[in-house]
Image (cartoon, rainbow, N blue to C red; front, top):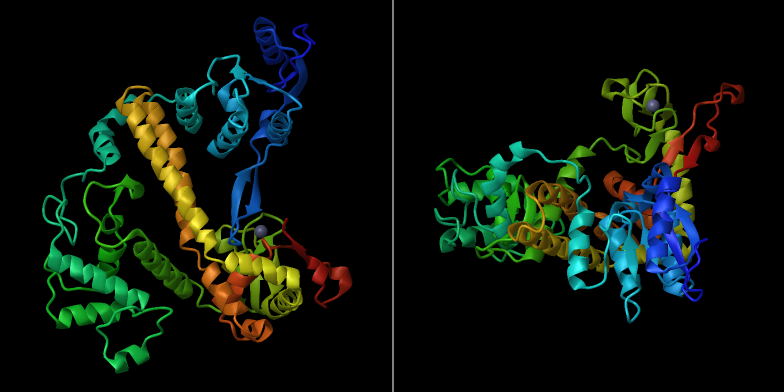
Length: 482
Ligand SMILES: [Zn+2]
């Protein structure tokens, strides 16, 4: 331990390699700090991603880093009063980690000092923090691909929220793609309302025939637009694809995309407000999944092969209907379980869970719309960060390659948030919890049962069949995933 001011007690955050520890100690000596704790976080455990359950019951991979959490706890509690890291990316590779660190640093006045051997991590003022956020989002600083400059003009336009140019104009906008065409905007709004079940143009009979929770079918909308001779951009007749396309394109919500990812707010006016647009996208995504899962096997996507970690899927073969790790889809083919017995067993467990008030309360919180508010907030933050990064690139604070790298990471998170926003889980759970929960469960469609199961458990690992136990189904073959 270096000798320094006895009153200063600081931990050092390092990779646990002695040279790095030596560097950290040397820096501490220069700063006159006393190291009281070295927290190693080696590469294998530091960035291990584990499956965790998100508030809406879906699962996602997140980085679990015990050393980093120890450091944050010690700083937050005042046990330590400063932090030395080897490098920024040793401390916070995940932007969420960096945000937690910034929160702790800013919880004191003056701020808790943070230093790094390489000088890459400084959080002393707002400018430092902005740069740290950008650099943190840059996962691989070594990547410098000059060929990417070809795409530069496009990148700049995307970052500024201007249309990319070339190709057809977007439905609802004129050739500049900046000015709304009122007649077309009306059609976009009409289609959205018909999908959302809020249109006032239906006859009472038509309205009666439509499940307002699901909305009118795309085919039915297309046929009506054709019958009314509503023109399209290309002159081709309306079909379900073009109906879906005009109403789900991010541009109609005033959002600019680049390579199919939303990169921020656009300079042109929105036709649909963001909430309505998201709801439309969510509904259509839900419909798509309905079709996808029409095979009735509601444990598809819930059961995992214990031999190769693939998801088992419903499969009809000589031995009847089973969940199988299918070789035609790259599975090992060695794990199979009879569909009726495994569904009966999971159903028994679900009904048992649904009788517990504590579980019901958890489900209620998932059903609560605040979940999507949270996702919306995260999405807004990420979109703001994308803009910030574009600005930093424009001011030449980061290189183009760094900007590209950083954007990729944030965009991935944006995608995750979007997935959360279109999740069907809250709607399914609201239906389940409305009235007699058990009766609602029994009456639920297979696709909804699956959603409920995934809200309750991350899934089950299916163990091999133990022949010594005969042909009887052994519930121990189902091991809940953690
Ligand atoms: Zn397998």
